[in-house]
Image 1 (cartoon, rainbow, N blue to C red):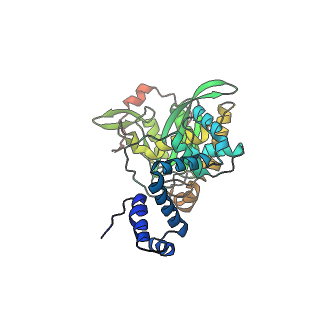
Image 2 (cartoon, one colour):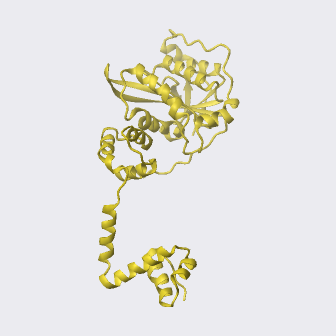
Length: 340
């Protein structure tokens, strides 16, 4: 007779118990099923209890064991809930750092298990990501954040983000505005940070980069085109309404929010920028990326740095231009590529 094992209950009642009734020894059962002798004894004891007292006694025993089980995380339960209430998007790693500062000596795995219970993640439709070769592509974006500074009070700041598609090495900075000249200067800072420039970069359809769309194609801002051409980089514009195309830069904002901003307070924007520089070196560059399985800095130095276009000897002159918007708008459309 063949037996279909569907779960532990089948193993307990149909196999171990049947073989016991046939006269198999505990040692023979252990060898045959690949389980310890103590496990065989537990299965037999549970079977006897069920026969003598019913199924409810097993549930009661399980509840008692659950109540007796303690965790190193238990003394920090209220601290954990308080941090989650104050910073709903904080990452497990940041929670781990905060609890360790408070004296927690357990591991990060049980903390993440508890975090999944307290803050179950929403189900999302999977999106296919396309990997790029070393030095081929960067992705740039902005994200606004309202931060309550200790000295200067509440203010909205803009986070500039630039990430290399292959190594996932990241550059961020915070500014009070996101105008054209700030965009240029932050690009130059990012290129200096990477010591080179990728061959192409993905952009949203924002006014500092794209003047307008004509016949389904973007018309690039001539001033931005002049800048990006100086660095031998080709702009690729995402189709409107397709933010997921830039997933490599969109998702790191979640990491910035959960690992840099959550759980920290800042004196002013200068303090925030200084902390961001520290965070890039100590956290972003060194953490193991979940997609590549490597620290971004390690992969960057090993494979991507040599593939980047070298920086020009003379940086682009980003002195503020007095060109009128109408003059820029009347310039001939610049050829550009659209990413679908």
